[in-house]
Length: 606
Image 1 (cartoon, rainbow, N blue to C red):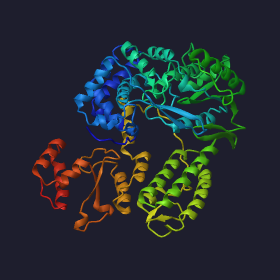
Image 2: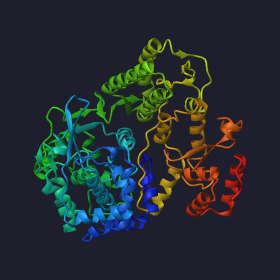
Image 3: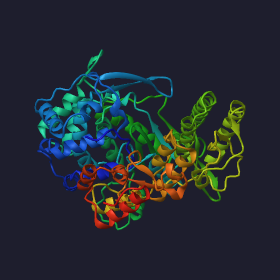
């Protein structure tokens, strides 16, 4: 089996198509939209193609190298044959008994402890098999204003939705609800009933999920409630629990059914507003963090009381009286997903004004200082890459704040003072900025700092990007939706870019590493020969003219290719060449291209 890889944006979609499971998922999604009841899902879960796809997806997860209570990782499964892995999963699911879960405690930003449950790698593989079948069914039922842990949705979409409601719908009162220990207090019986209600009615599968929820926690015992944080199924199950809340709030106003048909939603809401006493409210949810947007304080107070009672009566969940509140956005800010948001006056109306929240700024400064000190102690290419990738990651996340430039100026000023003192003996202002730097920070007049010839990225040089709302047309379970996703795949994502900056080839020059990133972007991540999209950590950068023959690391002497193609270019043994050709099944045109590169390195044509 293949070695461990790091996942990239939308690679799972390519995996679905490669293993022939996409049609299965599409049918499940379409049937769920029609209100079908699914009583034979177990058979789909234990199919060989679904199990092999689960392995491919789980090995791309960085957490796959984390050991469970049995001390095993994905590498232990990688050593098995396809037949052995399939037999292992099918055998365990016949009479499923989960292995004990390893408890790991991590500190939350507020200083409290968050317990994580690390299942064994075989149990994680089984969870992934189940997740792949359940996700399309649940996606058809989930509300459109739920953004957490869902395909192709992100915090940007949730924040953009809040901005839209402030700017266009003039909803300036927000209800903040903080559920006390949500993940620890989910009732198993209620969750299983909710799954049954949305159509998951395979009794054998329900029993397996029930057993997973009651898995023994090593050193603690068996829990009778809660969804273990850290499990692959947990995000989906938590969305199932709160999906009922999403639709209940939506039915109060947005999806309220009227006796008359209205062509436009604006006409419907105008009639409801005049002829009823309904509470106008709209939910925006990211996992268990959600906002209820209202037009007036009276409506906000009424919905606040209603939600508190509903959560207690329907889900047996309590809210935190200290953190749950009503905020008038015209007077105070509301924090959401790391941003502080307020409705400020602009002309004759109010618009959303967002900044990085103060706690986040403090943490960004602290982490930046830590990385600066790390470079001071050991000014290697790797450590400079870690600092640059951190800068890119922070800028990528927070650039959707409307006033991020002010916050980044403050953060940059602080980090510049720290780096000036700590890098005094190792930094210089002389050098040539990389192509990546020039593309990324075009128009930035800030003084450049170089360490061992590598330029450091400026934290203060961040431009605001408008947060975009989620498009309903984007859907991994419809052909039209996938067409839009494939267009996105053609471009190099921010995550891929950050990964390449963070992981340079240590044994190579700065010029090589910079041109390697530029080429991956220029070729849209595709192999020059196969023209297939490559994984960000599974591609080779080939020297057209070899270094020992007088070649260089310059841009025009490099090309991005698939690892097997790279080996074929350099292969000299006939048996090896025949094996690779049989595996690749190249066309005549592709063989011609390979031969051009083979001749350049001094090998004969094939």
